[in-house]
Amino acid sequence: MFSAGFRTISRQRHAANNLAQGQAKRTMATVDMTVRDAINAAIDEEMERDEKVFILGEEVAQYQGAYKVTKGLWQKYGSKRVIDTPITEMGFTGMAIGASYKDLRPIVEFMTWNFSMQAIDQIVNSAAKQYYMSAGDIACPIVFRGPNGNAAGTSAQHSQCFAAWYSSVPGLKVVSPYSAEDAKGLMKAAIRDNNPVVVLEHELMYGVSFPMSDEAQSSDFVIPIGKAKIEREGTDVTIVSFSKMVGLALEAAEVLSASGISCEVINLRSIRPLDRDTIINSVKKTGRIVSIETGWPQCGIGSEIAAIMMESDAFNWLDAPMERITGADVPMAYAVDLENASLPQVPDVVATVNRLVQRKLVA
Image 1 (cartoon, rainbow, N blue to C red):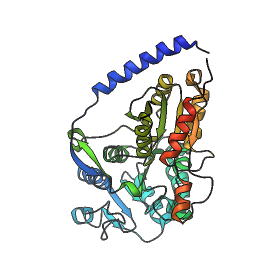
Image 2: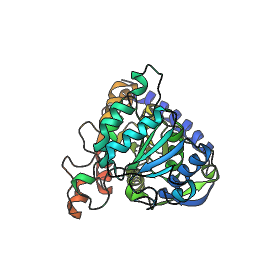
Image 3: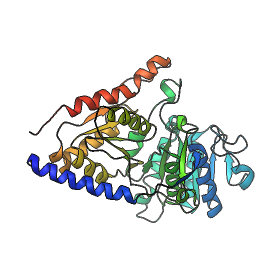
Image 4: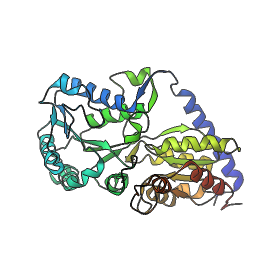
């Protein structure tokens, strides 16, 4: 183990480096945009940029999308590039994967990722493994997108988080945006990528507005897959999350700041690949880490982050064991009170962090 003095000096250096990086970040935010409109803009720009890009799914065309994400695209690009499908996920997913083998760039919309279960064989066996099984001869540039996780009152079969499911599959890339900039930049990156990319959106975030910088409004704006974002810098504990739970983490961090606890909040953005360096460097600065997700605890994203802590030199910097905040280990209930009890809440984060900062492994 490192001495306490060495750890303190090193953390000060990490803090200084992160501060310097933070000062270089852009701060010009000029327009507010909803997550829904940001995804729509990304798809529109990429369809205009590349005629090989098309989108298909249930109600994406004439109905403008179940959540209006594809609004206006059918009118602009027509029925050959914005395609309404029957209710047959396995069928239209397989068709799209076949199209990607022949140099097209399909975007498959699932009305909810829960329905992707009907097409998981196509995603895992036909899309994720094709490049490997063809010895690099046949790529599969395809995007699978739609709302992931809980909505409101959607009960057990429509409330699952699939981040851990799909991020366990070699050959897939998996991203999960939080803000409007995330949504636009990651969607454009996913469409341009030559690998199959899973985009886990969140239904309850579609109508939420975020500031969009001048850079993010550009048609050239792309966020690299595999790079996390530090949403809030801190010195006492690292909170790692993705999608809607980033907002919960930021809210809890604000509450905790009133009692003098400084939280660093990391928005993963990319689930596969994970940005290990950003997580590890943050823990070297804070000495403590908490993960938040709505998925089940066993084999979750927090479990993978815990493994990183154990298997990397971050372990030597921990002042307390990592803690995970997850969804309850039960199918989602329909009743509102039980649904809320099954999901992470701000008091859960505050209580966990308060407990964690009192624990020490090293004197």
